[in-house]
Image 1 (cartoon, helix red, strand yellow):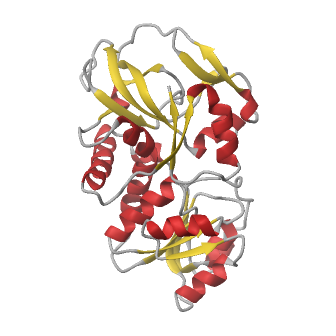
Image 2 (cartoon, one colour; image 1 turned 30 degrees about the vertical axis):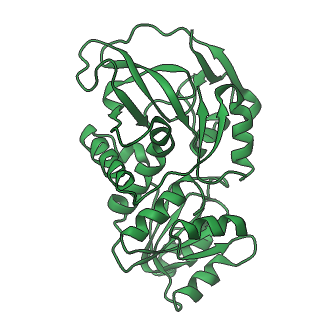
Image 3 (tube, one colour; image 1 turned 60 degrees about the vertical axis):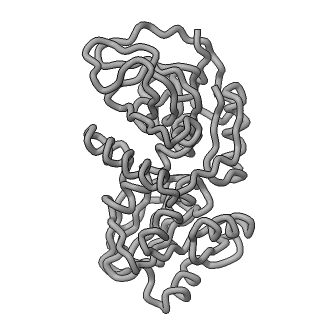
Length: 325
């Protein structure tokens, strides 16, 4: 039976349990995928802690992996046995040696992309694609603020946005992370533990502010992010690394310049298969052309998922990290 990391109750990293779970034959519309690499993402900690509730317990976690199709169920036309595939989003459960997954959530991995690259970039890279090209399309010549610029999403965003002619101001947690972000195309870095980031953004933009802030941090940056926006600017909040923002009076958006606020998800932007394929293909293209390089900085065996979570939550990771099945 394949080994799988599941939670039987919500809580800290200690609730991650290495179980053996028998898998039935794929049902209609399903595929059995044998994983070769598994991506680690901060959203996994939300499922584990209960911030994002799972439908029932025990339940697997993990949103991203790459592998090979071992078998398919009735009616599956999207993939065939032996295909190299990857996925991001969909039902949590990627922390496993093998799993069943809806076949229409799988995308084919091109020869130019390795299994490790695919597992390390699908959720993060497609997040960058939908945020910057569909949620709030950025334009050449614009300046944007991107929080956590040295993280897995941030490093991809810095490279991709530089290619598009966008100036990125990035917040980071240390001078070492600032150096890494700059090496990946971030024009200006702000170490938020040392500087007042809204004040510094205003200085860098001549007092104008930025038209859009991409914020995966949440509670600790929310109000400051609003203070960075120019009139009619947009705050795109796509994560809660520091917790959910506190409730606030919507009148604040008016007094600060008729601001916009959105809380998008990758799942909503890839709900249709054609959207999923288009997003994945856009990502594969920039990686194949060398515009975006995927930095895999840490790897843990599947059985060490608990330690991987402790390291992520201590903000001791940069770039993309993997679990090895």
